[in-house]
Amino acid sequence: AICVALLIWFAQRMTRVMLGCRPDKLEHALSELAAGNLAVALPQADPDSAVGRLAVAMENLRQLILQLRDEAQQVGDGVTRLKKNTDQISRDTHEMSEIIVGNVATIEELTISINHIANNSEGARETIEKTSQLSSESAAAVRRAAEETGRVQGAMSGVGDTMSDMARRSNEI
Image 1 (tube, helix red, strand yellow):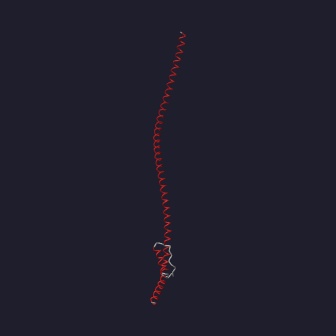
Image 2 (tube, rainbow, N blue to C red):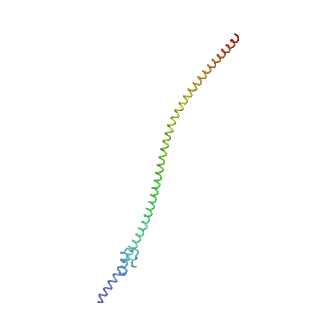
Image 3 (cartoon, rainbow, N blue to C red):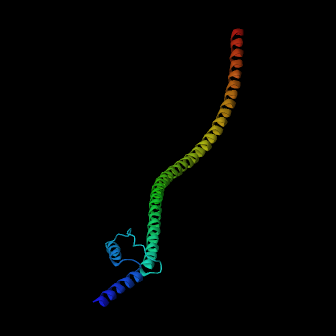
């Protein structure tokens, strides 16, 4: 019985040495880890023991998880900024398209106005040409009328002389 007790004691001691801590403390920490509690610390153990190496692996894993969480947060922040920028670009593009539509309408109105002006200019040119021609014709008619008036005046002067002469002869008779 003493041998069996010594053998059990020796097996427990060897298990504790190999593990690096008491099995009940390790079992409690592993149960917490299995439940999802990543903040649980493994019992203090010799770094060369199984639990010590597991503790190093857990700390490396915890650091990796923290780094991934930080990087995921940065990615999330980047996505948020990107969405804001994309939304702003979308709003700006919509505003620009409205401005462009307005500019196109204005250009179309200007084009129509220019066409009207060009058409009116052609009509004005034709009117000016006709007016110029009519003015030339009127000037010629006025010249002819002045010449005719001069002839009529000359004739009237002659008639006046003849009448005066007739009046003087009438008095003489």
